[in-house]
Amino acid sequence: MKTFTELFNTLLTADEETSRQAAREVRKLVYSSGENEKYKCVASIIENAPAEYVKIIEDWRQENFVMAISVMYFLHNRENQPDFLFPWLFQLLQHPNGYIRHAAVKMISHEIGPLTYHLRFPSEKLSFHKFTQEDADMILHSLFASLNGLLAALWQPKYKKYKYIDSLPPSPYKSVQMVLVELEESCGKKYINRLFGH
Image (cartoon, rainbow, N blue to C red; front, side):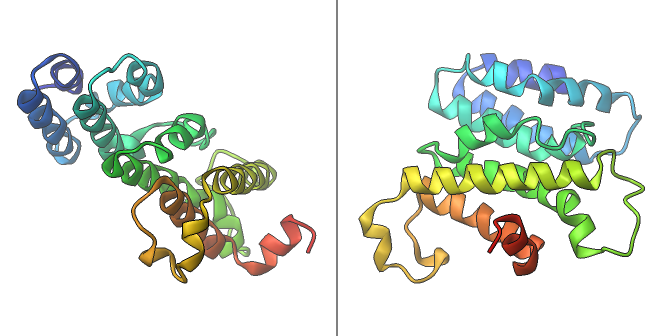
């Protein structure tokens, strides 16, 4: 079986079909049993993803790349800084390609769990997280502000006629709404009101 480095090299340089196959092989490699050594290069690939992504010209290669990153994202090894890729992920939320937006929603949602743990389980210690409750609150506040700013920028009058997020047409606006709803549900009304002084 190929290594992550070999698969990403293929993904970034090969023809469309071979690149697509390499992107799918990443999932298999992530979930295959094996030595811990392979995960060391995963953290590096994820950390360098935004810099690699900007070099990609073809739409189909961008999709393959983001899909492959989203499969292994949970192995990023940056638990002390869960928002390290948020600027890039916010960019991806606005992408015209729905698969890329969906992958971004998935990656941001992955971080919502640990960030809201102290709100959902207030009596339990944050022993396995490498950030403080205060850090989590700051990141959550920033995330709310950024998502609401994005919603305002993406708003179109045609969205007014939709009562439910599920019924919205596929769009960056809908993707941002999906993240915001998950964030609000994980935080709870009381916390959100406190956060924004309501």
